[in-house]
Length: 285
Ligand code: NAD
Figure 1 (spheres, protein in one colour):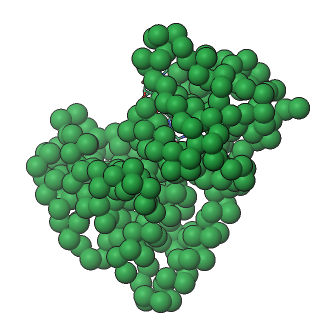
Figure 2: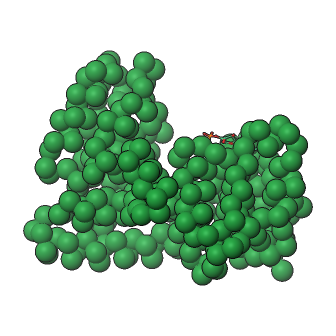
């Protein structure tokens, strides 16, 4: 039987409804709204698309949104000074740095400069550390989106064989900790696994498979375990199409649940960004 589709938009809509109700309550209680501030350095077509989408979602939920576009010529020191200033602005709940940044700017240093109490993307070392300790309300948006998709299946992760392919700081690593917090038996595969040639044997064991590599079709459909859950984070442009990292057709013949690409993880990440903002507001209110 073909897999059920885990459609991000439907799950995002129900999450957004919950966030909106919470924001309404917070506004009544505190007489002000959470505010998300986005910093963009230079003009960039892909950033502009994200920023537009963020503004639309934020405003639909009653969250204030402001975009600060800095000139392309801004130096690292100027950007760091601005972030310090924003950290001290009591009207701002959360800050997000839009990527990519121009050459010569070190985004990692800027992200670390965002105060942990204002860290909309949950990428500050202190917030990442809380995930390690299993005590967190906010986190990297894509990893949190994957957990939300898994939760929507109502499947108990306790003791399940979970395999994460990809160990980036924004997806694979935090996600593996989140899965461990749910007591999934978690394996993390990466380029070393791929080069050793043992990726198929790990993937074949996965009752829960999450792939975040960025290589179209790197996971073959016939590696997917019968009845397994497949979350495909990958976004790859092949010709004029966007595809994931998993061979969707054959994989969906074997899996119980699978995310489409596009339309799986992607639509949820902006909703999680808003949830992070609301959690930061509550923590600071
Ligand atoms: P990345 O590009 O930083 O790292 C890629 C990872 O894949 C690394 O951990 C690397 O070790 C691993 N890898 C590379 N080749 C491999 C191989 N042959 N076998 C096994 N592992 C291999 O990763 P990222 O930033 O997490 O992005 C991964 C993908 O997810 C990209 O396609 C990106 O566009 C997508 N992405 C999607 C969203 C979303 O909202 N849907 C968000 C973030 C990233």
